[in-house]
Image (cartoon, rainbow, N blue to C red):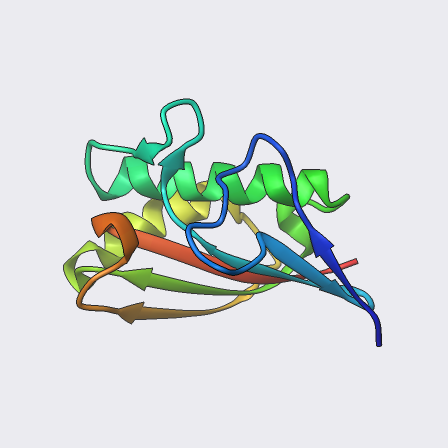
Length: 126
């Protein structure tokens, strides 16, 4: 198995010593994405819905740069600051995933980098 580091311009840069994504054979492992607006470099304000949209748009752009699309995702992991936002996250998520849903886990965490309300990582298949 050979790994290939994926770096897509126009997507948020890693905020630590990790890659945006790593390809291993026919799988793409996408690091956790925060709701960072690449225009400003800051966390999107306006609540969990807007932050969820931003994360999924960033993931979509990263996948596109790697030759994939959202429908190629086989697993997502969602980290949210408040489980009371679960229904709101699901509402936005269902705009991006409409059928043949990926497997998914959602976990409440005490804090996320840059005090974001949400972070999503995923695995996609070529």
